[in-house]
Length: 268
Ligand SMILES: C[S@@+](CC[C@H](N)C(=O)[O-])C[C@H]1O[C@@H](n2cnc3c(N)ncnc32)[C@H](O)[C@@H]1O
Image 1 (cartoon, rainbow, N blue to C red):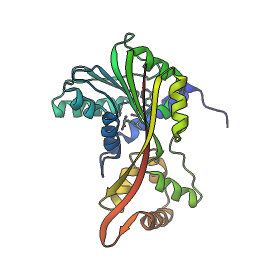
Image 2 (cartoon, rainbow, N blue to C red):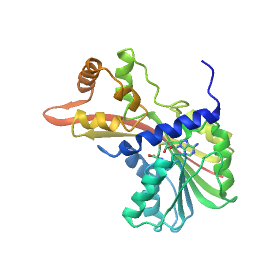
Image 3 (cartoon, helix red, strand yellow):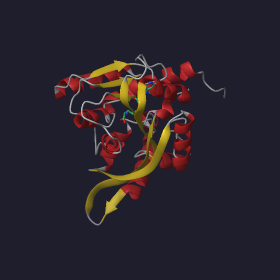
Image 4 (tube, rainbow, N blue to C red):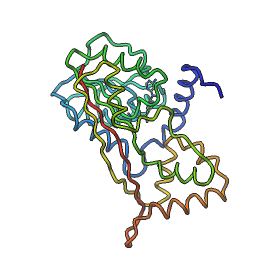
């Protein structure tokens, strides 16, 4: 199959996130939200720092960044998906935060040079068709000495479902361009001309109150299409297999899944 043009791939990614927005990280333990907190913990964010969150989604890294800098006015979130931007703006207004959230492509940031102290990109790098172009933009909008913080998946919370689907002969790719190796992420950041690169893996065990909650949560990921089009008999077998994998046991209610993310930090 021919490789899709970057523009086609971007449109498909935008449509995918527009479609899953209402299910994205809203049920269950808040997987993206918890890793968003971890990312902010890994960074030196000074009070009133100017922060750009690229591929902000539903604001998993945006909200803790605002808490840490103590003000929403110096923080900006951008995303390719109009629906994500709309939902996150609504959440900002619900929280009473005057944060600037805009539709923008990571590969074409519309900000002046050196206008931020920190650039964040949580679970976004794998979606950019021209990743180094995006990293060059991150570097351009950072002030000299400014910091970048990124996360990528080694193993996402939906990986168990993905593996079960593969076992049943329905291989599903969660995202193209997965960066699941610490050396690979470090290399990507160095190629982007960043220095003081540090990458570490962090694991979080996510607990769901039921398999149904895990299932509904997975509908907010790249597996949405596979879930919604699954024949009932296959769905029953997939759910049984998942239940065997994820049930905690010892009379403890619910299921749990481990997720592992890479947290990368570097400086311009
Ligand atoms: C897996 S989500 C991560 C969202 C959020 N940072 C988080 O941690 O939950 C990936 C996000 O990247 C956005 N995205 C994909 N390609 C993009 C691009 N070229 N420019 C900006 N955002 C993009 C998607 O719309 C989606 O909201």
